[in-house]
Length: 325
Ligand code: UDP
Image (cartoon, rainbow, N blue to C red):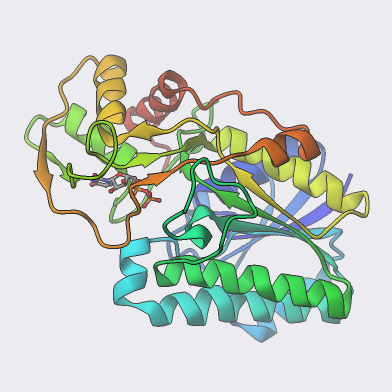
């Protein structure tokens, strides 16, 4: 069993992965600046409150402990914000990753699982999207993830750093044990906002555009449950610990759901009406993003188990009513 550094392990996906790593018998240290993460989301692992750009803090972490690998989540992840404040995305997502990789190389840690995103594809020329499709992000968030993937490619060749980049589609749902979930301030993601509208009759969701070239006019996304994301990270880490790398996988279900279908599922699960109004399209939103995840399924032996709409909305609703932080 291995000792792993998790950056951003107090965040939504990072906390679930940290918990599942520990359940699988690994031990973890989390580094998180708590800008969006939650102290209460980390249990059973040492939490170092620090920024990845803080060289001294990173040096302290890598000098004090010996890691078999790193799982790297820490990053800003709001598409719209990245368009307005690109500096945050390039300075922190790319700059922070460079500092992390420097520290890893100084200490001979050469195995990394990287949280990438389907945003690296931009507007895909074909759906479902395979890993070989053109990489052409349409916002600074996607650019920042692609830069880091490219850095990893060069670092493998030059320094032998092995990595697995997981290009997530839409992370959603909450831990099945109800202990961890999504808690963003402000909340911008569809599913928590749909549930807010179900719970609060005075709140209406704004549906961003109903004139997309999709069956019901609303955007189609591939929603992947956070527990399934966690399984993918564990499988990726296993490959790295066995000496494999550099690999890139789409992590999605292959099934698209429209915004309207999410609203309908939420109404079924909650038994309440989801009030909504139709607003303009949101900048940077492609009409359809659906994964071809066959590479992850065959190479990682990974299968999504929790990503059906009823389980996604059911676990998210459970968390919405009983958030722990
Ligand atoms: N969306 C929406 N209203 C909202 C938030 C999101 O209609 O208040 C739509 C958005 O346009 C996108 C989908 O829901 O098509 C998922 O958006 P989210 O922000 O959850 O994830 P993203 O796709 O940006 O990663």
